[in-house]
Every structure is written in C-alpha cells, then in structure tokens.
Length: 241
Image 1 (tube, rainbow, N blue to C red):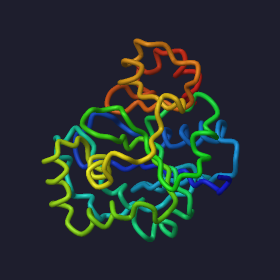
Image 2: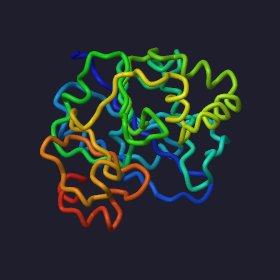
Image 3: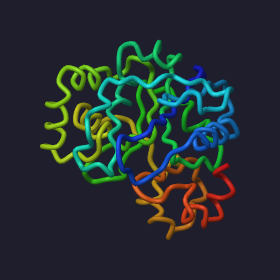
Image 4: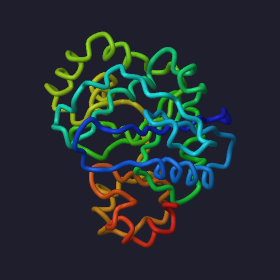
C-alpha cells in the first residue's frame, strides 16, 4: 500500500443512440469527488475523444481507435467499452502515466472517504456480485499495470472469438464480460462490506436508504446521478458535485 494511484476516467461520444448522455462536466465532478475523498497522493486522467472540452487542469489521454468499431453484443443502447481493456495491456503504465491504476466510471457517486477502497495491496481488485451473469462489474477496477495481462492477450489476439466465447458463456456486457470470462470467479472483489454499492442492485434503485458504511456507489445500468431522478435523492445532490 502507499503507491501513488492514477485514477482513470473514460469519456467518449457513442457512435449512435445511447441511453445516457455524458459530458465534460461529469468528468469534472468525478475528479472533484475523488479529490475530496481520497486522502493520499493521486493523479486523475481522462481517456477521451474530446480533450479540448476538458478543464485545463485535467490530464487528457487521446482515445485510441482500436476496438472502437466493435458494437455491444446486446444492442446499440448498451455500452461498448472494449477500448477500456487497454488497462490490461503490457504498456498500460506508459499509456496511463502510472503503475497503480484505478478505473472509475463517470456515473459514480463518492459519498465518503474512499482511501480504504483504493489504497489496497492486491495486484488486482474489481467490483463484484452485482449480476448473476457476471462475477465482476467493470464500474471499478484497481490494478498494478501489467497485472492480469491475459485479459488483453486473449482479447487483442482475436476479439471476435473472445466476444463470442463470453456470449456463449452467458456473460453480459462488453469489457466486464471479457474480464469475467477470461479470469474466472476467484479474483478479489469489492463488496458491500467495503462500502462499495450498486444503486440498482443493492439499493434497489433508491428504494433502500444509503447504508451507514457506504463510500462509493455505482449507478450503472439505469439512473444517472445527474438525471432529474438521480437529483431527487438528497444524498446524491449533496455528494455529486
């Protein structure tokens, strides 16, 4: 523990209709929340196709074209995030500018100190247990650059075969389906015991109150924190800024 963390965010324009609209202000808000609630040395970068739209003090990494033309196997309104698998490439430290990388989705809400969440010694950690079809949820990933490079090796060698195999094994999603399919079920995961929650699954889309130990909330697959419904929850309004 103690190694400097580079937080990696992702923002690009989808090629067609999508269920959510992501903006530069959402990158800024995520950076602000992490700055307030991670109490060790850290960098924040954003992989994007619109670097000119970001705040000048946010480090932009130009989005690569590789795998950008691969559609979601579940239809156009679902995300195609295969480009994020670059996290597992052998040159990840050079690409992202750090050796300890924490990937955090833009539709996340940081509600309390997340230093215990991201200051961990394991070479690889991922959010888990939010969907019976996957062992892992790609909303939050922490890894030492170069760890679990078999994910990249399998996918980059033959993307079509990797996607077909994940679909055959009834994995759901794009990058998280590949991660689950390649790594199997025994990786270390963040759970509710760590204060990491799914708004949709663990909080039943807001029908359960925010737990006392909550630190980090993923709002994957439904209500965005900036949406009118999301802003209807007092704890989201207070923390998502």
